[in-house]
Amino acid sequence: MNDFPVEEQTFLSVRDNVERILNSRRGSLVHLPDFGLDDLSEIYRHLPSSTHRLRNAIESTLLKYEPRLKAVEIEVTTPEPGMTVNFTLACHLRHEGLVRFDTVFTPDGRTRLKMRQAALDRY
Image (cartoon, helix red, strand yellow):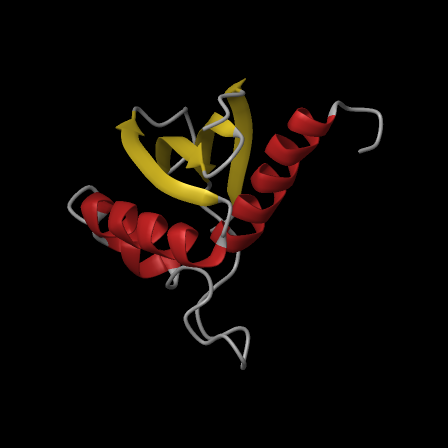
């Protein structure tokens, strides 16, 4: 990671942590029982009506467990072929600006993030 400028290292670190949080399931860490998301099979079973619930869970969980975020905007997007749910996350960082991720939830319950845009904006 040292091959990247400091600002980009921050964006990459946030991406890695957000992806780790979204790929974790509640109850998997004894000392942090609400870390991660609920079992996605229940969410998937009730799509598309459960999309709003998943969106709210993502926002509250990320704001609680990624301390560099001050706000998260989540937009539901059309799923890629073979995928279950797609979102665009706009993550407003406390000190380093804004980073957007394409977020894909796969049928096997995994979450993949792809950085779309990152902009440094010091406050």
